[in-house]
Length: 221
Image 1 (cartoon, rainbow, N blue to C red):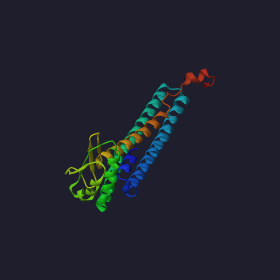
Image 2: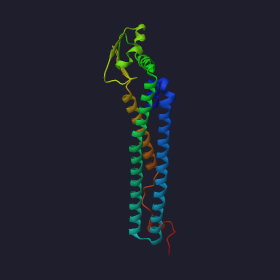
Image 3: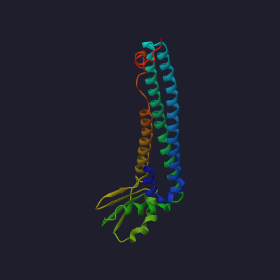
Image 4: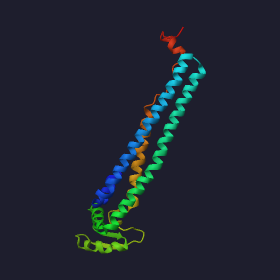
């Protein structure tokens, strides 16, 4: 889950930022499920009304209208979920970004934990190059005494609290944008799954007509 990625990169910020983001994401998913259920029930009621009319009158047009009503209801359900997904995910990501940025502005020393966590992913590296925001250099200079050689450089494209670690075996990108993209992808996937799950529970078969009732011995006289 993307939230676990964010949490691992910023362990000291979890209580203030990531946990709030996870709660907001859970609320978004709950709203999506509730909206899908509401639209589904409304669509089923509308569909059953048309189907009852088709069965009562045995009219081909009524049966066709029932089918059209069902398809229209399915389309409305998908549109509602899509609008919810497209509207709320950016808000969650934006709120998370704001919370994390605020935490690092108030406690800039946290960047040390970010760097150490990033370096743990490169245990097999023999050389390390660390890139941080110019104002964060003072907080990471003390890390030079590690067993492995560490070269610290500044990077103007990084924000306070962000870092990149380069090595002879690979690199770790601990920018906020990278983590938030993963969070957004996870939320989009979860909401899309909720939409598909709702659609898969629908009965899209056409309503039964008079012929089927006659075969079952229940045709009206």
